[in-house]
Image (cartoon, rainbow, N blue to C red; front, side, top):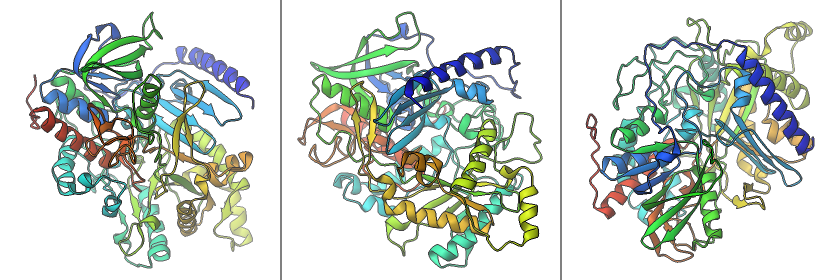
Length: 612
């Protein structure tokens, strides 16, 4: 479909959606708590100068804001997206359409759909598609909450600077503990209701463990991973924010409307505000320029009468935390304005080996699709991800390891999910139980509600981190990673997924973008990632990276740095992590802020209960 027609239809859908929503009563969620706004009401309140300006409010940016504010300096947080509090996230397909922005650019055609402040940000390029969060709290708003440590061998890679590798005891100790105490990860409790999907994952784990690792003990690979989810009602958490307990609706990835998800608006960001930080939303950074001993930060707003007009504020220290794509884009724009940066800018982009496959329409219930607001609390789906098959073995090479996690799509996507699975089952599906009798075939075709017996399998693995981020002629960020889908890890994962689907006697459906309908229609094995990494990778100097081990940006291709310009998010990760990357990103960001405080002579008070 031509890009122009696609854009026109998206606009029509938006107008139709608006009319529909005005005629529908909004859902009232069962709150006994109210939530204080964290962001300032208007960008006109931005001061002319701050000690520290933090760009972005994902994991790296929120940590930077909290720690700098706790050190007692003036802090400003600038976020492109909106602030959404519990009860304000989309809860039907119409609302979801209004909260989705798409940047479609495959080289042959391009278009932009939606608004730059919409919650779900989708970037579609020829080789890679990225789905990420846009809003106060970044990706934490729509991620699946998993806090896993990466394989220790990941840090053996010399892609990490030596000073970082030499500091691993502290990274895995003090820095990890600081993040852990703030995010409070915990596995799905045994005293919570049992989950049908968890039993199916354990069944699949037995088969996959035997096939991939040749082990019989399923407990060596199957477990409940730590989740950034609150499982007990609290009137005031460790930073003074009330939270309900998880209700098990399964809608984590459309935004938690119950306040149970430990997103960054429940911990690091209110902590930053508690300690004096100013937080602004609907502010997009254009570029950063050096101006004497200060930094000049150029930005536009998406909120007032002068939206789009470039404005300036100044800072002693600038900290980029806008994510792999966002931080890289800002530095690419800054280089166009004269900032001397490494030629490695944009390199070492990784998809984190992300992929998804499906076991479709097996004989037994899975019950993994999110539930509508009026669901029966006796039969919860649980968090989006509640269990894991961990196939990272010390006896196997690092690149052969991967994890499989259950996946619950939000209830609002159920119809589209059902249609996609039905189509893909005929286009790319593989019957993993081909020796069915005629009677079983007939009963299979007559069963209703196929999707309730479907398990989505999310996986992270080890790609080669050989992608590149560039700007196109219109200034949009583009991911260039030729033949990413041909890397061996994706074929390896596909085989493991097929074994899992076979154990559940379901139809195996590969990732539609890699081996299904979309791959066939475009004749390319593309990859969809929700964990983009790299672009501003760590290195020993500007010849090998964009920032040093502290996150300080190199001056060109030298070992000299701009000692007051930092990147502290997933952009600095120089390789695939092979697991959900949030915990590692947090550990790296906590380390950057610890070292920044040492360099600046700050004292960060890590205790709770003390506010400015």
